[in-house]
Image 1 (cartoon, each protein chain N blue to C red):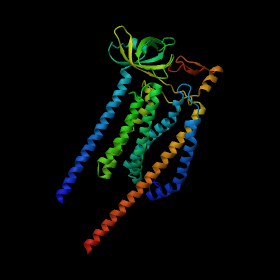
Image 2: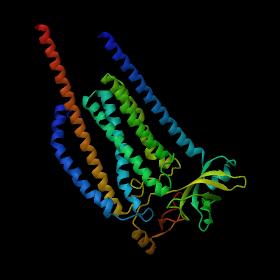
Image 3: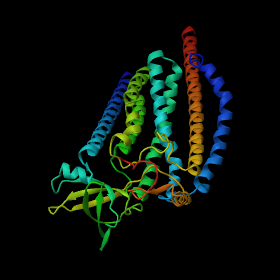
Image 4: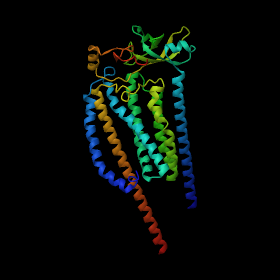
Length: 247
Length: 168
């Protein structure tokens, strides 16, 4: 943790990892996309509509995991003030929001033919919409406050408060009478999914996760570089001013 | 110069205020939606047996959930259908005019939104089909049925022979 908290060390590690991660992401999608969207079987109830699940489930997984990451990064920054944790939180928010949006859209597209409606105010769908608003609220709050330290603090507190939504999303289908079905994968008596569909889903989960990690590392790296440029610019302006006053 | 920067600072302050208010507004909406949804689930959902226990007066909207009873679907023409919703313990007659979802069939789990009329008929404004968490290709479903490892459950879907009925 402390080892990685050094930005220079983090960047050199990211530089070493990123080519491999990017290659693994491409490979996983190259296998996963045709497998899931073309060669996996249709479902006995939903028919071809089931293919939306191969995008929807990984998106939902990353939407929630991304928020968990945001919460952890915010806590680490609030407690230990590791500068990298703040950069990680900033890097995570828009990507998490993107996957939340993708989850909501693919869910609506699946819901119309399967349930007969694009949207219903059940606990799972609503708590997922709240997650989307939490991401947007986090980003808006950071933009709204000019002092980066204050902005980071306020947004970090917001993200920690929002963590309460994660168990609500996860268990909404068990606690309340939702139209959304309960979990297919993480069940007490094993996945309720045939291996011919489970395998492509797991590959897609891997592909999405690799993509996520790659993009986040990239974004943190870019943020470190941007910070360094900012620092150099400020130092140069300072030096120029000193030269002027000396002259 | 100082007036310009003063102007700018003022503008920035205003911007911050607007953004802050927008953030609060978003949070308020989020909270309201959450409460709305949870209230909906708790107060406005009934199975036929629930309905007998805790009746809802005619004309008040609620959601009726259960399975479409076998052999109960009647097409009246004019795209109107009637069917009975059962939860195993009680049944409720439902009338619906409109297009039902693809998954709507006898034995399927459904949620109907609507009101009771004075005669005790549930007039649905919307019928939604529930989907369960089981995913498999059609051939596998057939093979399981043929081998006798799975049987048609009360909800018309396949369940392992030795497993308990879902929801029990």
